[in-house]
Length: 250
Image (cartoon, rainbow, N blue to C red):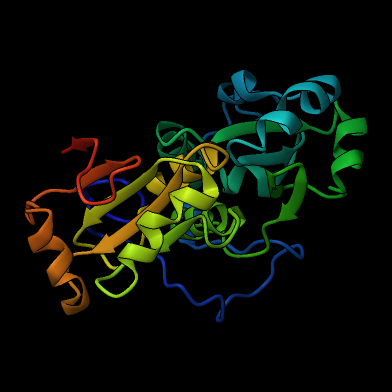
């Protein structure tokens, strides 16, 4: 159960953003991108059609929804050689992001030039994210790990508080001021899982979220106090009683 809410423990992404170079000011590709089919007009992928966005749909649906979940949007066009190159990675990433609840969109500039201009996308391919109604452009190598990290970085900071033996009482007792239930996730990975961050973003107005890294010596007392099973993620839900969880989810 890793930072993305998956059980696979292999990740190709390195947190640092250094070491990249630009291709058409946006992307570069390795040899794996050169294996692609020319099986439709202009190289367009009809699988994109279910994600197609129109201007009114973006304004009336995507923007309001982006206050509850982030969106990843691809800007593409017909006969775009570079667009074809990124398709294998885009498809693989989208499949995983959708299972986490991320919104996906595709804008074809040949049909939605108005929306592309509204987003500030003036070349293809472009990839951008939308969260809280704000647009951010992706400028790194198009590989799955980078795209996953880009989506994670779209989320506001401090959605989830790191909780230890030292600050747990302060965290739990803050319900008096915030008037919200508090949730604590106990897990063995040092970084807060993306799925948990996304949940925290979706319910930030109603619930306060905390995370306990079971691998730290600074959390040993918490594990003992709540009799936490260290072999599986455990979620505790607290209401008024900070000494006893109202619910336990494993």
